[in-house]
Image 1: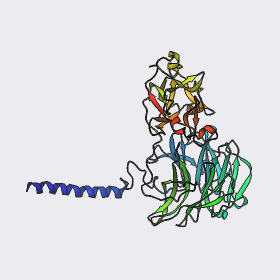
Image 2: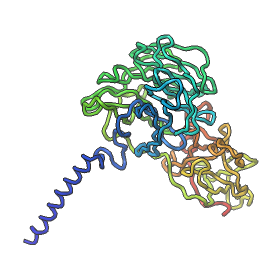
Image 3: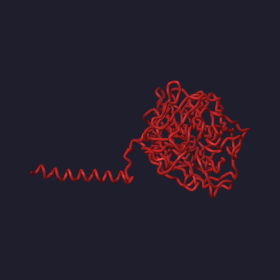
Image 4: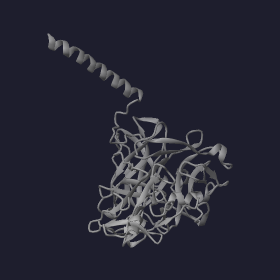
Length: 479
């Protein structure tokens, strides 16, 4: 009798718990496909489409079409999972003199200390100049590409900046009957350099996206009608950003659950060869709203892109930031095997790595000691203040690390701010440049640079890249 009296309340509580859990799922308070370890899909709420994804200032950013009364919004995240609506980045109706409606498919790039927001409105392509990834943005006052040149529909702009610094604008849509337009951009990013290039990639409909991997240029694009399950993503490759393009196959296509996946963007996690695809799709045979989703994408050994498996769980949560203790002095140790007796220090105004030990001169020990402070451009990241020269900070200029005093400019604050991540070697810390999101602080032949693993220089690609951008924070040489 006693055992039964215990079990009845337990069973009742269990049933009540199941009912409450089901009610919470139905109300949207819980997302059943998401967990602490995954993003879940979709990753943005409501009717969202045409996503461009980038990394700026230590955050992921998504820019979708402007379905909020032709107002474009910026969404940010530090981990791919928790997204914040940062508000309206550009209101076509009130901020653009040459267009009012059909605000579609934007893209954002960083250059010259500014952000450049490319967008389609009234079937023309414009560009606005922004102070930050979330604005404010100011339209240039006229279309960059007017409607219908050479029969190419002026929608879906995407900008790719090659390793040599040349920027290319790709665009084109379904009304262009398979035509894609390309322009070179001038260094100011708001004017065109040379004439229009018109191409007809096999099965091209709209939504160009260009990226580069291992010296190969990948052009991917949507095929079919955005309005139904025929929509899909295909791709081609070339040895040049201008083609000619060799068609390679399909990346995304409808299945029994998700229909019409397309208008995508690719993201490479900094310092790795891990790639993601962000795209929109219809779910549960509901063709009234498109949803933004994210999934992993993989390359074959021969460089081909494997067909993407669409999921409900999304991808692993991937933080861009790690928390450090601030306003304390520490020294920064090399972790590359065979060089762990080296530490970051400044010498004659330059960042270097040198051997440090107990018998090192006091001045060297002071030069190898830094106060880790909240980032000059973003308190969520970090800056490194010299112990020996208070008020002077490590910053990069032309990719080389210097020790300088602030000049009061926003650019200095950006160049002196680094976001901390778990070390790319799997332990320790890596420091990502705040305004060059594919470059980390790295030691090269005793010098300090910000470097990527896919850049112009011969030392960007060696196998030592991962340990060379991984550091250990240790007790200061000069407390």
